[in-house]
Image 1: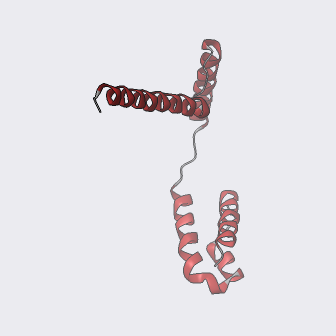
Image 2: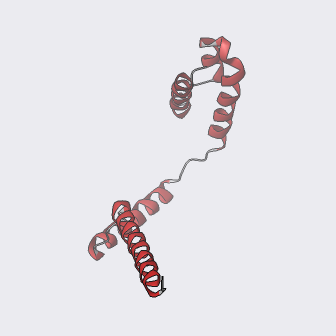
Image 3: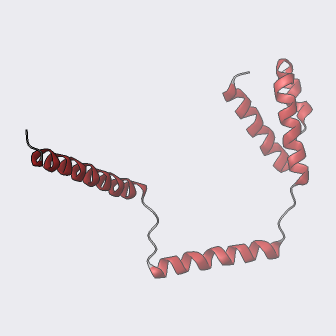
Length: 115
């Protein structure tokens, strides 16, 4: 089965599971030739869905409060998220410095030796 089609079917099945409407048989009837690959995946999705516990409203509010507090503190402190481009630049500059220093030392050592 095409991977893209499989992803689409699994996504649709997951959406229906969240709404409480889906069964794996509905999707297996649509594509009977893919039973060996699709069936086990749909079964796993249904088992995972059955073990998920809903979050209590009190926990939801506590999590929301913690996230907002952290965001506020970061904003007040002037938090700057890591910039991978900047970090890569610093790494490349450091490597270039070390390499050029090595070349310079090799040239100086070569000049000290008599020919």
